[in-house]
Image 1 (cartoon, rainbow, N blue to C red):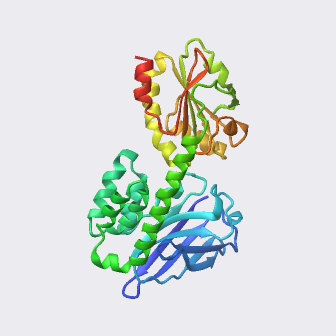
Image 2 (image 1 turned 60 degrees about the horizontal axis):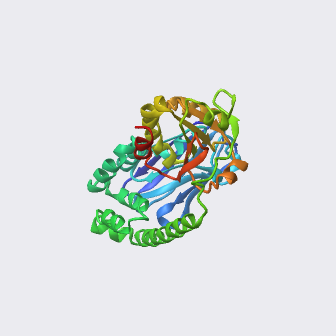
Image 3 (image 1 turned 180 degrees about the horizontal axis):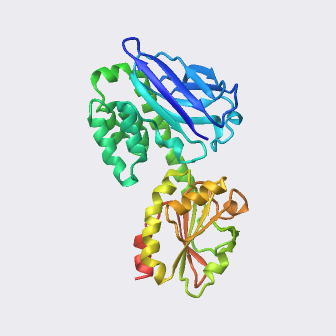
Length: 346
């Protein structure tokens, strides 16, 4: 499915026209624009007619919006719950929104065509290692410093850092977005409290470290079933990384370069990786694995007992199995595998 939209915002009234052509959305489906910076109010609604749509929202200042189908079932190819199609900024100018709902990574790529959207798109689609520098450059630029309202939301675990980021807003912006900033600060505190509760709960859980691994068998990218025990029992394999992940999980995707690095460094010394994807769409999962050169063992398990067996509440979840004993040595979300393996496979 491909959806192309153009958003036009014209001075002096700051009225906007949002137009788009839609493939894969049912005719008659209702679409809405939700304003994140104004208590998620509906800015405008419209319906899809003959594969097209048109909004006529009015804004008094730039704002961050989400394009949704009111009924998710009207979006035939949308892999996400809730009917969300894309998020971008309404601001004076022409915003180009290109949505490919069959691509599970596309929703998080933003839009292009205006200053804010171009900067946002560049950040979202950049290599993970380059994003922080791009964020910092954007919030220091008076043309794009409004992105601070998005960037600060990434730091519930560092409220001081969030405040420094918000400090890049101009006095006029701080006044204009006073309510939004207040809500953001409250949400950051709530997220920090929730993260602490989650960490406390995880700490209280019984770790699988020191226990025997639990066997499993799932199809790989060639649709051939691969049993974990055959990997562990391979005489040439000394350690197996068991990696629970999904293509739509950003922290999982950001961990791929690390997996590639340790696989290249330690595979010949006896390391194997057995990655279990939670993806629902087989075709997209296979394409992602191939595109990202994940040359180790990749299988797919869309739900099921294996997640209960390994106590998977969150992904990524990484385990390290000692093949000589079958014992789990590591059970973490983001272990420093380089440091661990350098001691085990010098």
